[in-house]
Image (cartoon, rainbow, N blue to C red):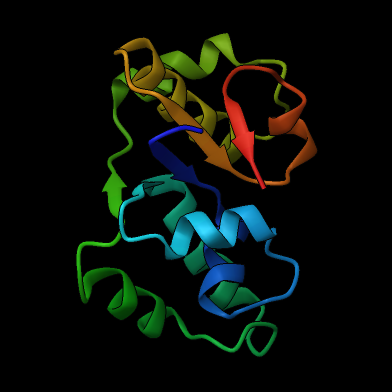
Length: 135
């Protein structure tokens, strides 16, 4: 099992709202204080956009999401930078831009020698084979 986990957008929202669609393994990892959790900035931006656009779909507001993220150090936000953007050029098997950036961030960590997995059930990510996935 990996020691560092990158979180995709739906995983974040489903965890924070206790949505039953969250995978059992992903939930255990997110609730384990020993897990190193990373949230690509693009996933955070996408989550905030979804909350803004789909008011009432989630039992969470944009402000509540940000407060929860910053109330403690349970998740580290990974800044979107030129390295991640460049790495997306290697991830063309993934058609969606946000997903490419999430994967690219995890791939860069993996290439730096970090044992990583992405917490996702997204078929485009899981089937790409770029990084291990847990759900």
